[in-house]
Length: 594
Ligand code: ADP
Ligand code: TPW
Image (spheres, rainbow, N blue to C red):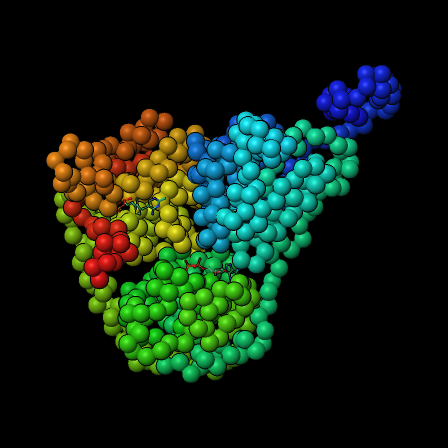
C-alpha cells in the first residue's frame, strides 16, 4: 500500500484539492504503509501469540486470512463458544492469553459465555470481536449486527477495551494482555470496530506504535510477616491438610509445590484440575479419604483454591463443623479473596511460586512432620476405600456401568500419563474425577468453577493444538451434545483426540418417564441407542460402538496409539448414575425436603 490518503478520505475532499493531493502523492517517493489488520497481527506476534481460535465473517474474515498468511495458526470453529473455550484452555495451559476472534453481535454473544467462564475460572483469554459503526450503534440506527458490545462485555470479564484508531492498536493489545495475565488471571474483551481494520498509517510509525509487554505477570512476593504467621500456625497443627486448587496448577510452580508437600509431610487433597500436580498415587494424597480429612483437619493450607461451593464454602458438615473450629491459611494472588466465606487466620498474598518457596525456605532443616496418629488414620481409611474401589473397578457388568468403563480409561492414562483428559457430564464427571488417576500437572481440564456443560470439544481442540499430546475427552452424552458439531473441526485439523461418549440415553440417566400420558418423552430422555460414533465417521474420523469394556479398551488404545480422530460410543446402563451426579442436594426440590 502506498497512497497518502484513503479513497474514503479523498471522496470527502473538494475534487480540486483531492486532485492536487493525488498529483503530489504520485510524484512523491512511495512510502510504505500498514493498516489495522496488519497492526493487530503484528501486535499479537510481537507478544509471542501465535494462535487464534475463531470463526470468520464480516468484519474479521480478512483478518483470519491475513493472520494465516503471516504465519499464525488460525483454528476455525463451527460455533464461537467453542472457539472461546479453546482460547480459555490454551490460556490455562500456556500462561499466555488465548485469543478468540468473532464477528459482531451474535458471534460476540456466542463467545461471551466462554469469556465469562474463563474469568470465573481465572483463565487468561482475550475475546476480540469486530463491531459495527460506533456512530450508528450509539444512535441505535439499525446497523448490520448492531450492538453496544463493550457495555455488554464489561460486567462479564476482568477488563474491556475498544480501539478506534490504528495508532492505538498496540496500546489496546498490550493493555488486554496485561489485564488478562497480571494478578488474578481472567478474560478480557477487546472491541475492534470494522472501520479500524482498513485504517492506513505509515508502516514505520505503525511499527513504533506496537508494544512488547514486559513482565506481564510480575512476581508478587509475600510479606515476611505473612509467611511467619502461616508457618507458626502450621507448626501448631495436630491434623494439618494442604488443599491444592487449579490456581496452583496454573502457576507452573510444580517443583515448589512438590517440595512443600514432601518436606512438610502434610497430607494433601487436589481439587479436580490440580490432580497430577503430584501423582494421584502419591502416598501423601488424602483423596481416597476425602470426607475424613476435610472433617478432621485442624489447620488447612489452601494453595490457589477458593472456598466456594465446590468446597462447601469452608463450613458445615463437610468440614466437620461439629468437631470444633478449623484454622485456615490461604495462599492467593487476589487479596480480596481472603475471608470471602470464612475467617482466614493466615493470608499469604502473592504468586504461588513465591509464596510456596518462601514457606519451604521458612521450614528450615528440622521441620517436624505431622503426628503419625493423623497420617496413620488417613492411610488406614485410604486402604479400605481403595480396596472397595478396586472391587468395583474389576467387575464387568453388561451393559457397562460408569466404573467398568472408567477402569479402562484409568489403565490407559496410567500407560500414557502425558495424555490430556477433558471431562464433562454429571455422573461421568464425578466418577471420572475419582477413578481416573492423573500423574502429571495440567493434564486434566473440566467443567471448573461453574460446572458448565459445553467445554468438551473446545478444550480438547486447544489441548491438542497447544501441546500436541493425545487427548481423551470423557463425555456424558448430554454434555457432548453442547459442542458435538466440533467433531468436524477435530477431523478438519486431524487432531489426536479420542472422544468417549458415555451413552446412557439421557441427561443423568435414560429412565425417566413422562407421567402425563402425552407422546413426548420425559425432558431428560434422548433418542434411545443413538450412535454418536457415526457423527465422527461423517467427517472421515474413526467411529467405534463399544458395548463391552474389552471393546472400549481396544478402541481407546488404538486411538491413542494412532493419534487419529476417534469417537467411541460407549454404551452405558441407562439405569446407572444418579440425578445430577454428586450434587443432587442442590436441586431445589431436594433442597426443600432437607
Ligand atoms: P479450584 O476450583 O481448583 O478450587 P479456584 O479456581 O477456586 O480453584 O481457585 C483458584 C485461585 O487461584 C483463585 O483464587 C486465583 O486468584 C488463584 N490464583 C491463580 N493464579 C495464581 C497465581 N499465579 N498465584 C497465586 N494465586 C493464583
Ligand atoms: C450450560 C445442567 C448439569 S450436568 C448436565 C446438565 C444438562 C448433563 C448431565 O448428563 P450427561 O451426564 O452429560 O449425560 P451423565 O454422566 O450424568 O450421564 N447447561 C449448562 N450447564 C449445565 N451445568 C447444565 C445445563 C447440567
